Length: 222
Ligand code: CA
Image (cartoon, rainbow, N blue to C red; front, top):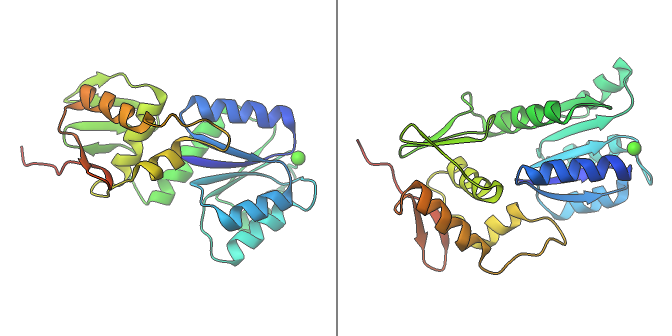
């Protein structure tokens, strides 16, 4: 998943970015409201973590502008303000959830998963395809009932594919979701992750459409 982190506090931003990257997400980080607005106008993200108290504008205005142009990108507001009025205003302005600082990283992780599940319109959090199941809450992957150990990036690639079974994802689309700005992308990284996933999940599980991208093999009747 690709996240935009909008946070002017360097320490909080550093720790959030590190924690989200550990989970295999790509994180782009901007530190003021103007940068947030221009980034959101030009790039697509799976989720925005938005501080409200920002230099050069306010997070609330960023959120209102986003919703005013019909952009439904999920937004979790992170803020030190904890008056009930602020919470209501944030949700009314179109935030999907609201966390008051200081918060536990575990709680943020759970809220992120809940928001992404709602966004995907899935009632059941478990993704299954062709004998493989993936639980975004525990990050556990099973193949035919046996646990499979994946690296964070292998997991991220698999999650992307399993969220859209049948869709062909280009290498560029996968890279875009795996890497944030300024992160060096090894030229064949995606094919290496796919190779590892095939080794662990079966050589036919992920198919390659030459020159187009990767997709999950159709499920066959057992
Ligand atoms: Ca702030």
